[in-house]
Image (cartoon, rainbow, N blue to C red):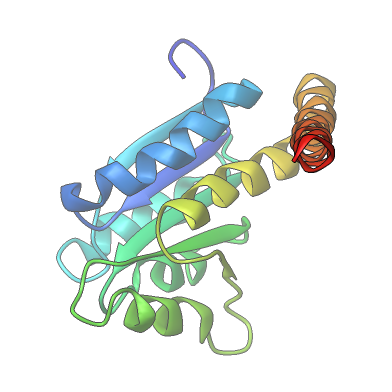
Length: 171
């Protein structure tokens, strides 16, 4: 979101992860949560990643979302340098279809927590929702949009069930 103080940082290890990470941006946009998006690497730009993490809270961020594939060390490297909540998204960019990234993201040592989402686009969408929930703890407008989102999801399921039941009676 432009023209607002970012509340969430979105990081990815490569521009090849952008298509997946757009799902995170879409969710944050839908809840009105301002964010900033950057490409940085735990391996290729470790000093930049560490500085980003170390200064994130003082810049007003409330959570950081990291998407990475293969060795997927970005979320852990960020978590090691901040006390903010870090959310990891394993990207399915390797021959192991994201399983390597999932294990690298979820298997953090004690003291370096990373909330790990599902592999790929579903995980990216959930990361955006999860970050909105974090921001919504302090922002009533975001909290209200989250409540409405849950109601709309439930209404959609109920509508699909009514349609199914109606089709069964006809057939």
